[in-house]
Image (cartoon, rainbow, N blue to C red):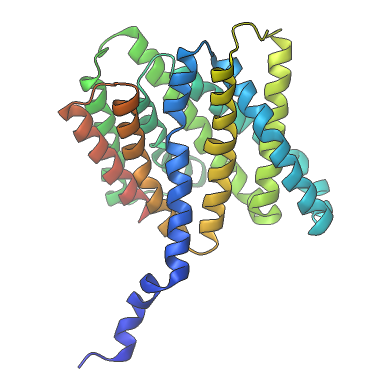
Length: 306
């Protein structure tokens, strides 16, 4: 006879709150996964890196400012803002802003599938940086997982129609640089998030990055020529539906699920991006792409469950 206590590890799976958290996290990941595909479409309608960044900033900045105002006025966060606000602002500008710029630039040269899988390797860069900076030596299993992930990216590069071209190398380098800056951003932000809370840190960082994008656009004397309703609609969708909304959906899911469970829901992202890229953009999907997709996903699962 099985004792009642032996059922306890499985009890949580059948609780309604668990499925609610799972649904929120999966919805956030799904919406975020459409981002590279929509960016590719925006480029087809006359957009460029600066235009897409500006439209995202204009549409998302008011939301971050509203959340920031609410946190300060209703949750007594003014002290934390004075102590660490400028640090969060700098991290937002030099971390998130640079990450997004490099990411968008990479999509001018490579497929949405390859871009997403290169970005998806950022946990391996966090492990490498933690080893170099904090002497946190990875285990043998983690090293094997990292190697597996990079073999997956190599498989996709081989399967790309532009394999061996300078465009492919340039785009891949930009995407990898974006992943590296994002890994640095996450490592640097951890102490601040512990002191400030994720919502305050995110609101300040994202709002600061949005302001930097606006200033960048003004400095470059960017014009609005060539903008059309479709491009504007895509930019606003990227800002609200693929950036702001997923951030809050995943944050809501994290209140119910464990960090490991939320991390594992993110593993569906590359599959959604690949499906949308093949179906909507008509990108090539070969056996090399399938092998690379599976290898990278297995790699990240192994790293996150270490």
